[in-house]
Image: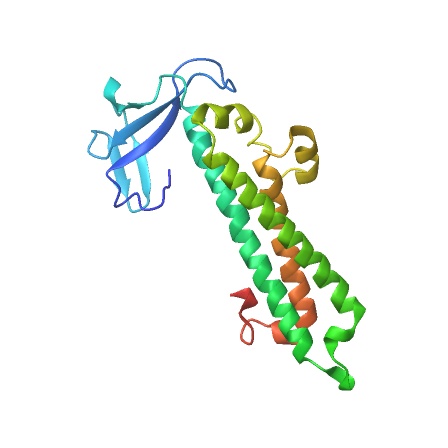
Length: 211
Protein backbone atom coordinates (compact mmCIF):
# COMPACT_ATOMS: atom_id res chain seq x y z
CA UNK A 1 0.00 0.00 0.00
CA UNK A 2 1.04 3.63 -0.46
CA UNK A 3 0.52 6.52 1.98
CA UNK A 4 1.98 10.04 1.90
CA UNK A 5 4.77 10.57 4.48
CA UNK A 6 4.52 6.96 5.69
CA UNK A 7 8.31 6.91 5.97
CA UNK A 8 8.07 9.54 8.74
CA UNK A 9 4.83 8.51 10.44
CA UNK A 10 4.77 6.69 13.78
CA UNK A 11 1.40 5.00 13.23
CA UNK A 12 -0.85 3.90 10.39
CA UNK A 13 -4.65 4.18 10.44
CA UNK A 14 -6.04 0.99 8.95
CA UNK A 15 -9.67 0.12 8.19
CA UNK A 16 -10.44 -3.59 8.05
CA UNK A 17 -13.60 -5.67 8.02
CA UNK A 18 -13.92 -7.55 11.30
CA UNK A 19 -17.44 -8.92 10.79
CA UNK A 20 -20.44 -8.64 8.52
CA UNK A 21 -20.72 -9.16 4.78
CA UNK A 22 -18.81 -7.26 2.05
CA UNK A 23 -20.65 -4.04 1.31
CA UNK A 24 -22.20 -3.73 4.78
CA UNK A 25 -21.73 -0.35 6.48
CA UNK A 26 -21.32 -2.01 9.86
CA UNK A 27 -18.45 -4.37 10.48
CA UNK A 28 -15.53 -2.17 9.42
CA UNK A 29 -13.16 -1.36 12.28
CA UNK A 30 -10.47 1.33 12.48
CA UNK A 31 -7.08 0.30 13.88
CA UNK A 32 -4.28 2.64 14.98
CA UNK A 33 -1.26 0.47 14.15
CA UNK A 34 2.24 1.49 15.39
CA UNK A 35 5.01 1.18 12.84
CA UNK A 36 7.01 -0.81 15.39
CA UNK A 37 4.50 -3.69 15.24
CA UNK A 38 6.14 -6.97 14.12
CA UNK A 39 5.34 -7.66 10.48
CA UNK A 40 4.82 -3.99 9.64
CA UNK A 41 7.30 -3.26 6.82
CA UNK A 42 7.88 0.23 5.45
CA UNK A 43 9.87 1.19 2.36
CA UNK A 44 9.69 4.90 1.58
CA UNK A 45 5.97 5.70 1.10
CA UNK A 46 4.99 2.06 0.67
CA UNK A 47 4.09 -0.37 3.42
CA UNK A 48 3.00 -3.96 3.81
CA UNK A 49 1.55 -6.15 6.56
CA UNK A 50 2.74 -9.70 7.20
CA UNK A 51 0.80 -11.43 10.00
CA UNK A 52 0.59 -8.21 12.03
CA UNK A 53 -1.04 -8.58 15.45
CA UNK A 54 -2.49 -5.60 17.32
CA UNK A 55 -4.06 -5.53 20.81
CA UNK A 56 -7.57 -4.34 21.63
CA UNK A 57 -6.11 -0.96 22.59
CA UNK A 58 -5.28 -0.36 18.89
CA UNK A 59 -8.97 -0.07 18.01
CA UNK A 60 -9.97 3.51 17.23
CA UNK A 61 -13.58 4.20 18.18
CA UNK A 62 -15.97 1.26 18.39
CA UNK A 63 -15.50 -2.18 16.88
CA UNK A 64 -17.42 -2.42 13.63
CA UNK A 65 -18.06 1.32 13.40
CA UNK A 66 -14.97 2.52 11.60
CA UNK A 67 -16.77 3.65 8.45
CA UNK A 68 -18.04 6.94 9.98
CA UNK A 69 -14.45 7.72 11.01
CA UNK A 70 -13.27 7.23 7.44
CA UNK A 71 -16.16 9.31 6.11
CA UNK A 72 -15.19 12.21 8.39
CA UNK A 73 -11.91 12.52 6.51
CA UNK A 74 -13.68 12.11 3.17
CA UNK A 75 -16.14 14.92 3.92
CA UNK A 76 -13.37 17.34 4.83
CA UNK A 77 -11.34 16.38 1.79
CA UNK A 78 -14.29 16.95 -0.55
CA UNK A 79 -14.73 20.40 0.93
CA UNK A 80 -11.04 21.23 0.43
CA UNK A 81 -11.06 19.90 -3.12
CA UNK A 82 -14.04 22.05 -4.01
CA UNK A 83 -12.33 25.13 -2.54
CA UNK A 84 -9.11 24.32 -4.40
CA UNK A 85 -10.93 23.95 -7.71
CA UNK A 86 -12.76 27.20 -7.07
CA UNK A 87 -9.49 29.03 -6.45
CA UNK A 88 -8.02 27.73 -9.72
CA UNK A 89 -11.19 28.72 -11.60
CA UNK A 90 -11.11 32.23 -10.14
CA UNK A 91 -7.48 32.60 -11.22
CA UNK A 92 -8.35 31.61 -14.78
CA UNK A 93 -11.32 34.00 -14.84
CA UNK A 94 -9.24 36.91 -13.56
CA UNK A 95 -6.47 36.25 -16.08
CA UNK A 96 -9.05 36.05 -18.86
CA UNK A 97 -10.46 39.44 -17.92
CA UNK A 98 -7.01 41.05 -17.67
CA UNK A 99 -5.91 39.78 -21.06
CA UNK A 100 -9.21 40.59 -22.78
CA UNK A 101 -8.95 44.19 -21.55
CA UNK A 102 -5.30 44.49 -22.61
CA UNK A 103 -5.46 42.79 -25.98
CA UNK A 104 -6.65 44.95 -28.93
CA UNK A 105 -6.61 43.04 -32.22
CA UNK A 106 -7.41 45.14 -35.28
CA UNK A 107 -7.60 48.25 -33.09
CA UNK A 108 -10.57 47.06 -31.02
CA UNK A 109 -10.45 45.77 -27.45
CA UNK A 110 -11.00 42.02 -27.16
CA UNK A 111 -13.15 42.66 -24.09
CA UNK A 112 -15.65 44.60 -26.20
CA UNK A 113 -16.77 41.44 -28.01
CA UNK A 114 -19.86 39.79 -26.58
CA UNK A 115 -18.47 36.41 -27.57
CA UNK A 116 -15.75 37.06 -24.98
CA UNK A 117 -17.93 38.80 -22.38
CA UNK A 118 -20.78 36.31 -22.06
CA UNK A 119 -18.76 33.15 -21.25
CA UNK A 120 -16.64 35.03 -18.70
CA UNK A 121 -19.71 36.51 -17.01
CA UNK A 122 -21.30 33.07 -16.83
CA UNK A 123 -18.15 31.54 -15.31
CA UNK A 124 -17.77 34.40 -12.82
CA UNK A 125 -21.41 34.01 -11.74
CA UNK A 126 -20.98 30.27 -11.22
CA UNK A 127 -17.80 30.88 -9.22
CA UNK A 128 -19.59 33.29 -6.87
CA UNK A 129 -22.45 30.83 -6.38
CA UNK A 130 -20.03 28.00 -5.67
CA UNK A 131 -18.09 30.09 -3.17
CA UNK A 132 -21.26 30.89 -1.22
CA UNK A 133 -22.27 27.22 -1.22
CA UNK A 134 -18.83 26.14 0.03
CA UNK A 135 -18.87 28.71 2.84
CA UNK A 136 -22.44 27.80 3.79
CA UNK A 137 -21.69 24.08 3.90
CA UNK A 138 -18.45 24.59 5.84
CA UNK A 139 -20.34 26.62 8.44
CA UNK A 140 -23.02 23.92 8.71
CA UNK A 141 -20.42 21.18 9.18
CA UNK A 142 -18.69 23.22 11.90
CA UNK A 143 -22.01 23.35 13.75
CA UNK A 144 -22.76 19.61 13.41
CA UNK A 145 -21.93 16.87 15.86
CA UNK A 146 -20.30 13.70 14.56
CA UNK A 147 -23.67 11.92 14.74
CA UNK A 148 -25.34 14.61 12.62
CA UNK A 149 -22.56 14.47 10.05
CA UNK A 150 -23.05 10.70 9.81
CA UNK A 151 -26.81 11.12 9.49
CA UNK A 152 -26.89 13.88 6.91
CA UNK A 153 -23.74 13.14 4.94
CA UNK A 154 -22.70 9.56 5.57
CA UNK A 155 -25.04 7.87 3.10
CA UNK A 156 -24.47 10.41 0.34
CA UNK A 157 -20.75 11.05 0.21
CA UNK A 158 -19.93 8.11 -2.05
CA UNK A 159 -21.87 9.54 -4.97
CA UNK A 160 -18.57 11.01 -6.09
CA UNK A 161 -18.40 12.97 -9.31
CA UNK A 162 -21.84 11.82 -10.41
CA UNK A 163 -24.42 14.30 -11.61
CA UNK A 164 -23.90 17.09 -9.09
CA UNK A 165 -27.13 18.97 -9.58
CA UNK A 166 -29.15 15.74 -9.73
CA UNK A 167 -27.63 14.62 -6.44
CA UNK A 168 -28.31 18.02 -4.98
CA UNK A 169 -31.94 17.86 -6.06
CA UNK A 170 -32.40 14.38 -4.61
CA UNK A 171 -30.53 14.77 -1.35
CA UNK A 172 -30.78 18.48 -0.59
CA UNK A 173 -28.26 21.14 0.32
CA UNK A 174 -26.01 18.93 2.43
CA UNK A 175 -24.72 16.98 -0.56
CA UNK A 176 -20.96 17.52 -0.45
CA UNK A 177 -20.26 15.72 -3.68
CA UNK A 178 -22.52 18.07 -5.64
CA UNK A 179 -20.27 21.07 -5.23
CA UNK A 180 -17.08 19.04 -5.42
CA UNK A 181 -18.34 17.85 -8.79
CA UNK A 182 -19.29 21.36 -9.82
CA UNK A 183 -16.02 22.79 -8.50
CA UNK A 184 -13.99 20.36 -10.63
CA UNK A 185 -16.15 21.02 -13.65
CA UNK A 186 -15.99 24.80 -13.23
CA UNK A 187 -12.21 24.65 -12.93
CA UNK A 188 -11.82 22.79 -16.22
CA UNK A 189 -14.30 25.08 -17.99
CA UNK A 190 -12.48 28.20 -16.77
CA UNK A 191 -9.11 26.75 -17.81
CA UNK A 192 -10.49 25.93 -21.24
CA UNK A 193 -11.89 29.46 -21.61
CA UNK A 194 -8.70 31.21 -20.53
CA UNK A 195 -6.69 29.21 -23.10
CA UNK A 196 -9.16 30.08 -25.84
CA UNK A 197 -9.00 33.80 -25.01
CA UNK A 198 -5.21 33.85 -24.81
CA UNK A 199 -4.72 31.71 -27.89
CA UNK A 200 -1.08 30.90 -28.57
CA UNK A 201 0.00 33.07 -25.61
CA UNK A 202 -1.36 30.33 -23.33
CA UNK A 203 1.51 27.98 -24.23
CA UNK A 204 3.34 26.68 -21.13
CA UNK A 205 6.58 28.66 -21.58
CA UNK A 206 4.71 31.97 -21.92
CA UNK A 207 1.83 31.72 -19.45
CA UNK A 208 1.46 30.04 -16.03
CA UNK A 209 -2.01 28.49 -16.50
CA UNK A 210 -0.54 25.08 -17.42
CA UNK A 211 2.09 24.94 -14.70
